[in-house]
Length: 250
Image 1: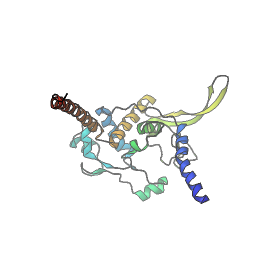
Image 2: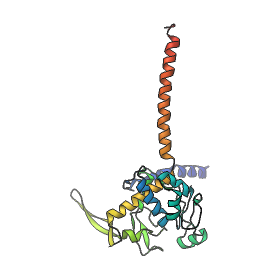
Image 3: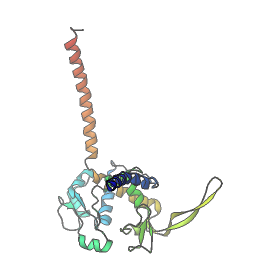
Image 4: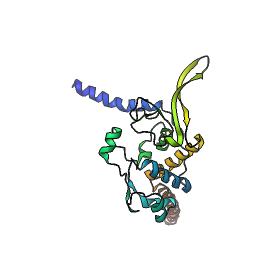
């Protein structure tokens, strides 16, 4: 009986600990716009070039990119490099066993990662936007990289050539009558892009991954608005019918 009580208390504490661990995580707001087709198309290009080598998006088909303004010819010429058909799923060509040996775990499927990472600290897009800008050099990690949002992550920094190399550096924080030292990210070696340009690349990539997590989201919203308008019209008709039916009674 005592073991059962201990187990029950432990299960109750798990969600509390999860929320406590997410309270200190401060996420930057992702500057995305799911109606910006140019951004979505750039994000699709970045996803195919930098993410699809290791990660799959096995719930997404290439021809679904019609929704962001791409034709079959554009998809085949610019986004398909493995000989698959435009109607095939977006799967990585990496062998799962090899990836597990290299990274310690099989890279997760990214189809719905923008929804799965939503938390009390922010949306899944906010998490991804902050995560992809928070890698830093760590010689103690097997890949040589670590991340302030996802400590001890097994994934290397796939975009490091664009961003450059960040390090954790001490800096002084002055408060009301006190001074303390904190660790913060600092760009140690610049990459091919300036910080603002790199942030825009990440925003475009996250914008696409948000679209990919729910491609029918905008259509669903439009259908919802139409349904509400029809229900409003139906209410007017039904109310008029009710008044006409009961006019002699009242």
